[in-house]
Image (tube, rainbow, N blue to C red; front, side, top):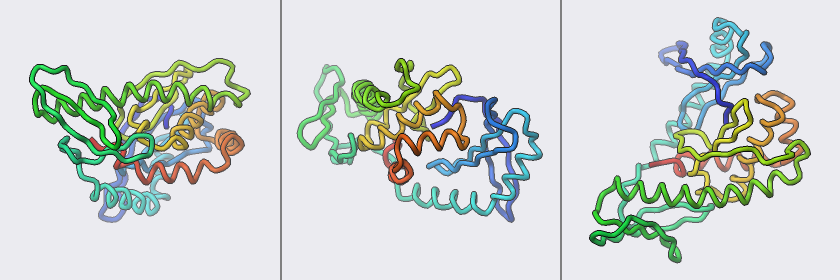
Length: 249
């Protein structure tokens, strides 16, 4: 869940390891505070104020190099056990935290379509093509996500005093993010989040709604998040631990 800012690429040396990271400038972040994130795919993101010198950023990353290396290693180890989808019958799919089986049916001249039937997500396509099957599933997840996110956004936003009107939202498939909030207050959500349990969806929505009040990941942001959802850290951990599986393609 990130604010939309331009990224620049940098790296430091840690022993024999080269640690690469993306630097994201945040206009509203104070120069004294810098945040380092290791994403579920093992990539490293650093948030810094516009006024913070690159040399200061590099120094801060070097101080945390051991921590970064450990977390990057753990992420890569988790990824090693996640196989890419082959889009064949019998594969496991997720929707709202439940596991379903993919069933592929081939019918000549049919318009590609996906439907849920019992414990299966049935994809009917004119040809046995992984590309066509993936696109059909992506369209299905996008449609489901649009409805689910709209319903849950109403629920999550209702008790938040700073949300007078629901923000504009859009869906966008992303490799490592569940959501983001632009400086203008537009929320972008990954349709693949609809694979996660509802409590995880609610957490991501709340996270982005908190960015309408605090446009960074500073202490005030986390204090607001704590007040709105005291158990968010445990929910985030559960979501992070399943991210590779839910985001895989």
